[in-house]
Image (tube, rainbow, N blue to C red; front, side, top):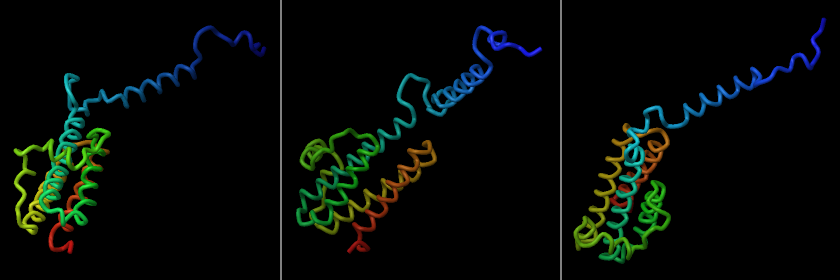
Length: 175
């Protein structure tokens, strides 16, 4: 004897509903970040956030260095402004805030105690100091790749490659 539709309808959730909600719960738990990859115990910023903040700060400091060289050697503006603009874009990509400090603001913010303060009077030496700063930062970022998760590692790799290109453009190879 076939069952009537009314006799099959049991109170409560159906098996399909339970399986769907269980699968959804597994997905949510897996994506919640609570799997230990964050590098924190919940009491402070994660390793990812610290690496992003450090990278943003490094890019802001490099932009301030560019600003100092531009202030000391205005004749280099055509050569340096595009590179400085990329460095500022890198800072934004790492989350350094929505507003890019203007060259005068970041020079003022750098003060006279930072590495941007001592710009060589010689144009070639000023370019060499920028190239060294770009190279050093690109090297540090390349080393940091091993310590950060996927998307941030890709961003660091891209910015490190840009820094290497900037180094080339700032040296005799870029003439």
